[in-house]
Length: 478
Image 1 (cartoon, rainbow, N blue to C red):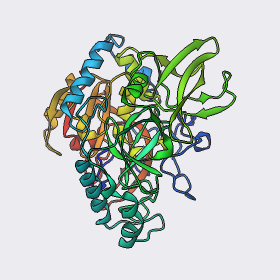
Image 2: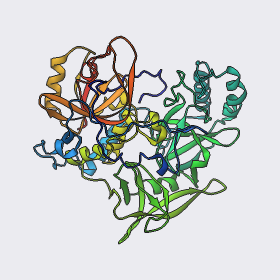
Image 3: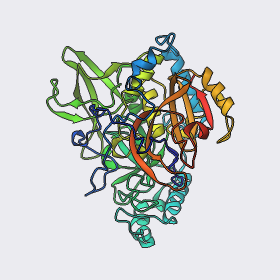
Image 4: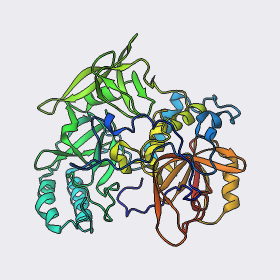
């Protein structure tokens, strides 16, 4: 996902009726059932969950066996070869940090902005949003007085001191990072409820943050997280005594990685009572491993805002891994297919994943900390080619011919895809997408709203062109 941009639906496609693909009669991916989620990001008060087409969807041209990770893994000559050691992954992550100025190690001295810079940034973000024509959930234009009377006083940018009086905290659950301190959804087009223009992204449980400012009502913190800066609800941030105390806890080498779509963290060892469901890529401090499962440490926010650490439980049969799994093609592709059918979510809305959120979580669960933004993901690793839209067909085919399935990313304008291999002369991908284009003359679309497998010929009968035609870069994460 690209932040702070005008939304364009340049996304993947299904074959439209009457050649619509059949739906597999299988269970939705774990964690996509809203009734099991004790906390749903992006759901406004009184709003119903947007419908999710039953999945995983099998597209025309995709066979049932191609919806299995094993189909693609068995086509590889050496799927269990370790592509990067844990030490190499740490070095790779450090290279990413050095490449991108948006990536901030909040524990490094001198990297955080000063009060004057934060004051200007907060005011700029307010002015940028308040000057746009946006709509609410009821398709009503959001009046300027709402911004001037409700939002601007709460932003309270003039109260940011210089030097900053920094606080250090951690997310107590997955929580949204917003452009403004408000739950109000702001839509670019009427009815676009799944694309809140204030939604930057979702930070995971145990994400460390530097608290730079507090809203006037105290309900919001303006924070710097490792890859995003913005407003989060203060009730979901627990404060540590200082930077070093926070660093010691989140930089531990003894951790449990969530490798399933989401996993129950429970109040009891037998997991009769679920506390919350952290998602793929979340890292939890590991206290102990017992016959019944794992004991992990969870941060709670006390009444005064301070952190209180408490032990919780994860069942032994849960999809988790002590440390990260080996970085192999087999494991990466299996991680990707665990999300097949999982909900699409712009910026993590509805506990879902947009295109770059999908690739981010897959690789994060393997120890590779990709950027959260699709444009930035496209510049990581080895560049196999840059192309003009609708052109360079032979060059693209040649690049894909040498690409490594599982670690190759394909970039379209505003969309990211993971390459999984070639079959019968066609190139296949797995990606998270919201809608399909189905017309040569209009903007007509059908909703997909989940992670799907498709080939690159899809969308070829729409006025935008196929995924292959619109691919503008191919890069390998090596």
